[in-house]
Length: 592
Image (tube, rainbow, N blue to C red; front, side, top):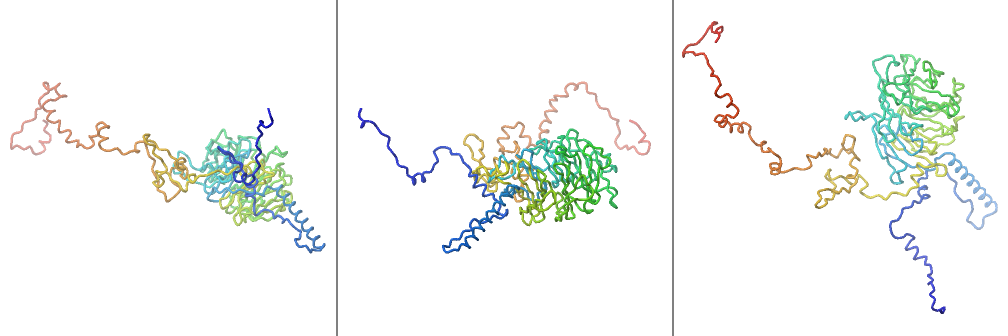
């Protein structure tokens, strides 16, 4: 065989212009890949630490050596400032943020489960919002469920109350302790179902030791650090009550705070509570603050007859001490009072604060304003009246970082999650902000921004589509011959969105559509009713005339009285002659 008979493969030259025009995609279903770097850059905060500009070199050709030296020095300073900013970003996760706007009023509490997969926020709009990081994308950041813990299934017209506190159980992610402006705290599941409702005490009993529960509003609560079945709640009835989840009918222990303030009758409202963990090397202790300005330390395991230590004038009396937290080793206590101060306390010298700074308080308007230790207890973080996040040194209370989150709007609650390494904040404008750093944070907001945006359709927006029952949208298609409808609109596929638990619309302009029962789906005509429903014609007849039709027949042919027709006795009456009339008293006494 000759070499000419051999077939050689044709050599095709690469055409870059054609390749760019056609692209690299192939036929069939394509997978959507996210540009992670670009999406993370979109979430970078503009109000973060200032970054130096690149440069420092002059573009003029006739620069002198001195000018070049100055430009080089400025460039080095800019590089140093950039490295310092990067170090700050790595230490504190505040370089990026995502915004969750699901509440209508101020966000009073935020909590995240221990694994960092679910976020629950509470607000003064009386609602709890449940967010799942695993199901959110950059363009679908929203809550998957809304729950009103004050509403009971047995009571249709229940009152709504603001959410004071919501805390995930650190040892069991399936339990959430929720306190509202009611005497009864509740335990909810991670899906919003009520698991336990604690008992209410008798308000007519004077001795708080004899009541089975709180008799007035529960202000706050927290979980036991080592026992997953125990929690403690603080109320305005001057008591702390320790509850067992397995026995909700009565509390396990009662701690009565005896106020010494003049004119208080021995009672004061409890404003905050914190339970120290012995896992970090400290003691099992329970701390509480009251409206009389006192800071009290109790033994975590009892007895609770008298406190282990007490500071009567920790803060100014008649001011709401909203923030209270314990360090991981159990030695340091931080409080934020209504007297515009933040104080740091040492449990070994529990008489005077070791550090005090001035910080404007918002507890007079938002009683759940928080202050907490960082996960490693090296810093203290809190919000401010101006909407800034303040990160302080845990030893001296000196400011280490101040960054704006919601400018000109008070920052109420702040939470630094240890596993996610992300800071979740709640503001007075109803916004929940999650601060994170892509290099040091894990999952959570970083996971949300790393996903590809969801391709949405116009029907996915309930603002533009309505169900056929509301008389505007005609998205349901009639299938010929089947007698069934195939609902394709968002409102048809999600009939409960936009409605309250009672079935009424949240939009005041939309009239309430009553529930359609199986007997009211159609309106049959008169002929159909007469043919299909037996004795339906009786509705149009006069019952008296219907009975009189059988009068002659009953007289001529008595069907039911023939049995005693022959034996029926004759009625005998007294005979009175005509014209005689019986008068006088004798006629009344005469018997016939």
